[in-house]
Length: 289
Image 1 (tube, rainbow, N blue to C red):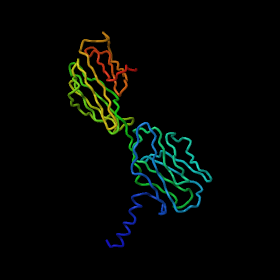
Image 2 (cartoon, helix red, strand yellow; image 1 turned 90 degrees about the vertical axis):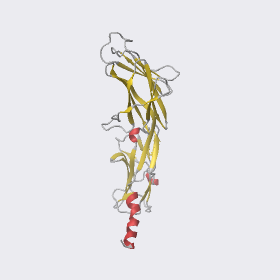
Image 3 (cartoon, rainbow, N blue to C red; image 1 turned 180 degrees about the horizontal axis):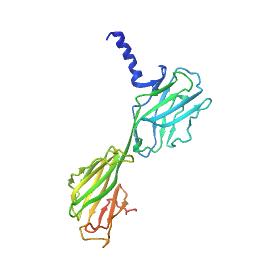
Image 4 (cartoon, rainbow, N blue to C red; image 1 turned 120 degrees about the horizontal axis):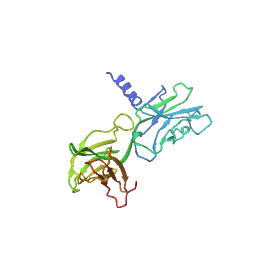
């Protein structure tokens, strides 16, 4: 490759890797590579653009998408500063910036784990040739959340043996550990994969661990930890024969009691042979149903 051709290819790389215009190389756009957010709190995705042509635009179209899904769309009409969103726009999304001042920043209220992903902003001047521009690299949004124990249950029977099952959620994905009845030794659980989220694919923010061969008359603690915190729940399985509801038939009844300090309690009633198993939290206050 001769020197002239190499110089031409190198001069095109910034445009190819940075953003995509419609033929007018005088556009430019600036976005951060990554933004971090905490679940439940608002987050702003910065995006600004520039163009040397200072002639007032008749109108501007602003679009934000997550992957291939369009999340936000608004129009700034001639003589107006506000960007009007469509009537069916999700109210969680709104434009934080002013397109007239070349600011297309998007605000997401109450960020959720499902909001994590790559976002792209686009600006367009309707009716003008070569008058649209979109960032191609996008901004990666990482939504973080402390661990949550979604469920803690007992499976099996006296014949097949009992096992405890703990399902957790968080971002980064929590590490699950089991604590033995003496509260000192760590027991090795079995990772059983990631359960489905709200959609059909497995959730990348959830994990399940099973502890086999648990014994009646003992208690076992599931502990979920990530850099944002820790949550624990303790399960106590009463020995067979100690039934709280003699003569109970049908599937057991599962009640979830939530305690302060991130601990949880579970109570299972019924089941001949299984009797009663309960979970004690480490909180000092009483339980709330």
